Structure formats: C-alpha cells, structure tokens
Length: 98
Image 1 (cartoon, rainbow, N blue to C red):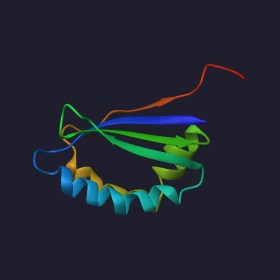
Image 2: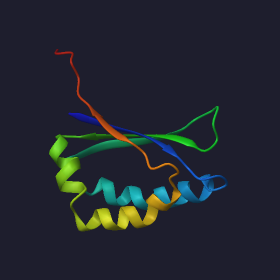
Image 3: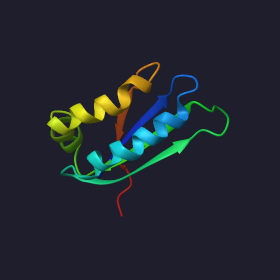
C-alpha cells in the first residue's frame, strides 16, 4: 500500500467552495483502479489549509493510472484552481513488517 499525502492551501475565502467541489471530485478518485480509501482533513489552526491522504495499492495506480487518465482532467478542472500555491504531493510506504 502507498499513502499519497498533499497539503492543500486554498485561496482565501474559497474553503467552502473547495469542500463542495471536493465532494464531487472524490467520486472520480473513488472509481480509479488501485484506489483504496481517502480522507481530507481541515487544519484547526489555519482555516485555508487541508491535508489530503489517499491510499493506493501501488504508486503506479496513482502516478500512471489516475494522473494519466481522462478522469484526471475533470479532477483538475474541479479542484486545481483553488490551490495557492500548488501542492507538493509525496508518497509513503510502511517500513514496519508484521
């Protein structure tokens, strides 16, 4: 399992619109091959800051299967205009076995 992590900074006064758009966009990601689950957490201290966590079966499911899909274009259309700056996405895997 691969954990995708992105800190999302949303433009001022756009948090409510972002949350509404994300409710629509999550339908896209949930339908992708290799998708396991996701969560979006809103920062308590910073109103325009969110943490996106997505679990994928493999890195390729995210980097190739999702990002190179036609569905990703709709995802971008729904969400990317809210970000300032554009988020850095990182991937993690467990180092604990058992």
